Image (cartoon, rainbow, N blue to C red; front, side):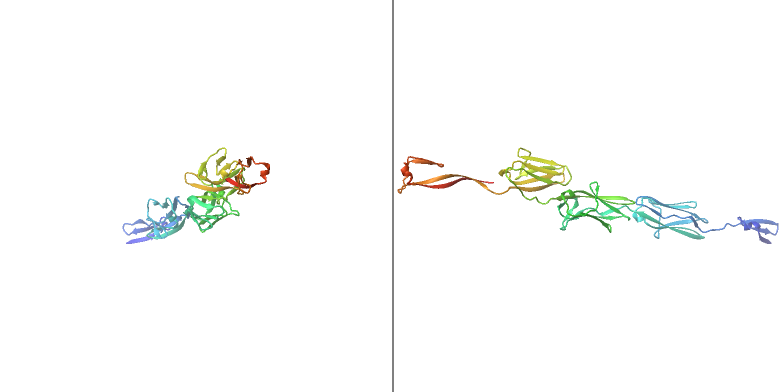
Length: 380
């Protein structure tokens, strides 16, 4: 006969059932371990970090072994790889992702289960991406819709130009425009906009001084990105210079681009250098030629050519004298007739001088006819 009864310790932490045997009389204690489903003692927290960083989700789980954990992203199971490392030690479980990309954004879950039940927790991984230029500064558009490559933009003075770049990245993104190292601010000629990822710099009435290197800087909490472009502005074709004889004339031009420049002046396609007649100067972005004591021989077409390692450009101007007039070199000649018979007295004619053996009484019978003979014409 076997009789089973509960010992007082059954109701304590160590639960036991005592079994009494009929013969011989003895008590055998039997132990029972209580089973528990998994429960998360600490849950992973959502993480916000940057592209290129690492992220680690960590949790602790209690429950009756054996506990199995499964990590998922947006419903898809994650396996251990070179970038995604899953580890479990005792009741500690973790998922670590290295070198984050924007594709790692999403909702992550960790499910812990055993044969007695399961528990699940959820967290979010938010990744901030630094700005990226999808469309860099490749072209500008003038007011007359002329497309130009930005690597070497040429716009006429007075035009309106647009510099644009398409930016992608985690918002908020701030955009800054610079010319050289100077930050560009809006004014009555400059308008800056950034809408739907499109950064635009609009410059109205561009001048030669507007030329140079432009930078678009886009930045957010994750970092920054820049793109560059070059804008060159040409002046309108110079009007002819009218001057007076004997005066002095200066021909000047402004140059844009990347120095140093090699500047050469020409007069009617012949190179001119500093001399008693000309004073040629070139400094930084300014070039000039000074003509001393202008004469008729100085009128004509003057050309300034500036070049660097990238290319060259020219500017042409014409010099004219005010008021067109001429000098006439001529001599006065007389024809004569003596008497009615038309006989010629003895003598000879030279310019304005006449010698003859005519008697005074014969002068009354002498007829003189003046004639102008043109020898040379000089136009000024």
